[in-house]
Image (cartoon, rainbow, N blue to C red; front, top):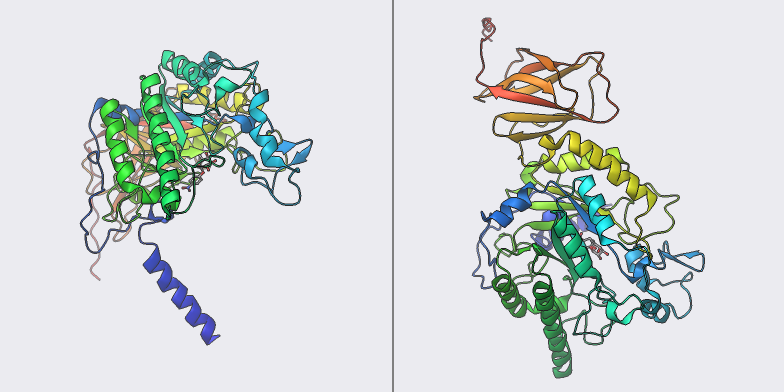
Length: 501
Ligand code: JFZ
């Protein structure tokens, strides 16, 4: 017993020593280092950029992620056998192993490109759907971990140019979304599973260094190719940057980030691109954000606004629990509902984040019916409640159990997910606030709501309360938004004397 306790304590201390920054961005509030180190490979761009591109990023509110590639053909199964339990996620199916994996699977996968011919692919249809959903940016996979490029890259033979389809898919996506007024970000996996020049470990021998250096040059070539071919793009979304090999190339990645930014002014790059010379990713060893926004909120949410520490961020989310690429069979797993996604969207917005919903089209280029329905329902809701979703910020009003606050100047929005049974929405207002709810309306249904102060008179309570009365006749089948105008507190209820204690 004593030993177990000791071991537990040891583990506790070790976790404390080993993990100050490595994963701090998604496990809790950020920890600042106790002492600062000299760092040569820290942030390149200033924190909190104020240029128009970054301002646009802050106002996106809602985005769309699309994972599309060769993995869409198997759709997480092969000859009727599911890869569930054998591969990490549908877009990881190339790494399918164990007893269920087909014989010679990697070879089968690496030849799938010969049958990639998506007859239904129509980028304009996707872009129209994204527009109707209310997405203001899209993140599109140009190349996932399998290394297959959806654009006709000059630097590899493993690309769309070698498929029966032949045409440049990235170009069609960039053009169609740009035409709809949706900003385009290109997803790019550095890590490649079947590139002989790639390695996970730090290159050690001269031969390994030569090989990996060739890989780095190839990566640079492809990235310069992307920003040259598709000058309309607003950002690059990096992935597969966690291996020791990439981490050891901090001098290369630092220079490459500079070069990309010079070639493409205004470019937005998240924190998952590179690390400092001590291997610190996302944030450097002094706790400064690397890149323009925090890119670690993947299928997870900050527990509270304080965790964000003032950084820009987005949250990317799958509809199934995990799995970004097409997955034929959604049975037996919980898939998020439109209401789940709207809740996450508004939770994100209340903490200044953008919320990005992932779509995994099938091998022919069709979104699945469930995704079509979610896109339509989300769009219908977001259109009606746009003021609460876009172009607003976190509100300093105390977190409410009814739902989520967003605020623009002196207009406060409360998106109600949990309607009180007595139809009285009680807003807590810190007593030192200069502005209190003065009037309220139902954003979508219209109609003024009665607002009245409710001084609970609780000893030592730092808040006072304002009640907003919902008509009992008001019906809602989804979350609804109360829009409040804030103003100076008017008349105070007469103060009763406190007893001496
Ligand atoms: C990566 C990919 O491996 C995955 O296939 C998908 O493309 C996703 C968007 O990104 O997966 C990750 C990467 C990082 C974290 C989690 C999943 N992370 O930092 O928690």
